[in-house]
Length: 254
Image (cartoon, rainbow, N blue to C red; front, side):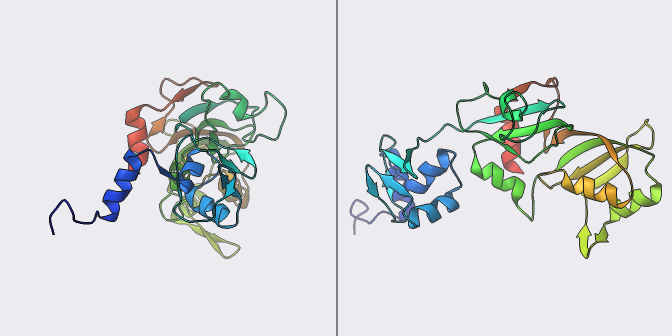
């Protein structure tokens, strides 16, 4: 059989389809920011998606960018990926359910036309970095139970942290039968013993409250100072920026 007549390998077919402008329906839905590809497959299978007026339940179905794709009756469009880093001030909740001007979504409203959402949470009175994106793969990196993405917090407690408690937190301890562990913890160099640096991979800060409440401390100030390789450098409080290509590459390599 000549090379000309040899059947194309699946990968070659996929590349040819991409060049022709076709895109898998689940990828189209994921790119729109509605949900992940895996979730999209589920919604497709139960008949929640239509293409040009017809219900599509076929896995692997491909569409053109200009096709009329609807999710629960509402038309969706593939979005450009956006990555926005915010240095959150006090007084803004990490939610979209409260009044105008009081959520982090208000702070990044002009950052992108894409349907970005925050990864993880910071309490209303907490400070620091929050990453927003419509990239489900990056969201998955943070929620991956084996790897995750480390966030470094600087906190002030209501009283000095005893060294014995610092060691227990550092080594891990059991609470209600569950092992509680952090990536790292230390006193802030040159500061009082109630100022702590702590690194965790959880997407929320509930773990920190749980830890210090267990040892009878109150957190007076909580500031997320880094997310993976991302820092506050040149990002004043209350401001946002788009990730540079270098920063994005570093995040994707985690």
